[in-house]
Length: 404
Image (cartoon, rainbow, N blue to C red; front, side, top):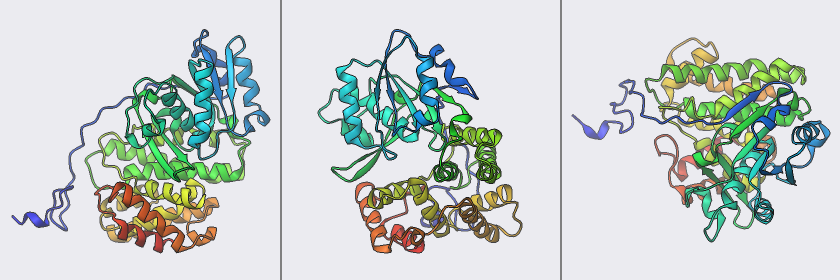
């Protein structure tokens, strides 16, 4: 047997197809979901009345859309303090201001009201407030473990990141020009309120960003190589089909409750860890995208819409089996695996563009030289990335150049 030609991940010779067994996994999701209109009023059934609660929010949109008033009414009688100003890409410096306030006022529970950025900030604040190390930034990038953390609840107003039902967060730091991730089961929200009516007033840009972000969350877990996980595959495909079907409805009618509800629930299920159980995952698109956002300031979802099609084309042969399945089941394509794999990427990119999001760096006036810095930054910190760890600096540069 020629061991040199055996793929160490699929354990197959070139050209040989073999479906591997499902990976072992531990599934844990303690978040209570309150879904539907009017559910904000029920948060007092989940928040301990004797706790000092800090409300965390962004720039004030929750005041104009009525969400803040609903929260205040629901928390009548609670000891409540507030912290405002969490950025769309939450910054360490701002989070640390909230940490100081939480420590000073002896906060016992965090209530994040907003989108994924507010939730991500809440998770870092929850961990940093009780962190006894020298520098809370060490919590990022899994360099220090999260032990105790303040409990968190959330009221979601922007479906996108899935942060309302997982233990993940991404935080930026201006001082070092970094954007790093944090992940811990300790940081899972105790509850999440998902009222689709809170999303009616979202600008179209944010709505579309959320749909694309959720879509790529699914494909990062689904478009890898073939594992014998038919249930997880079909769960992933159901989310993708739902996003494709509902996107034009919400674009045509922003107050279509059914469309808003379906998108909101799809976005939560895209990253509540369920579809990732036992499967091989990628996340290279997200890693590269985070670097692009730090360097250029481009919206996270828009970096994904540019990088993901280019990355899939670069890895088309490696991912061909799943791309062909994706093409048949999500886009109803016919033909050979090779033909369908190519067409499926085209269809995905077409979907992104039809929602109103650009899929080339040139759409945003970003040149190649700016993007290539991302390849150096990422691989210097993490080495090769991707499902097989085979995307090195040169490969990422090619992906970015092809996305111009």
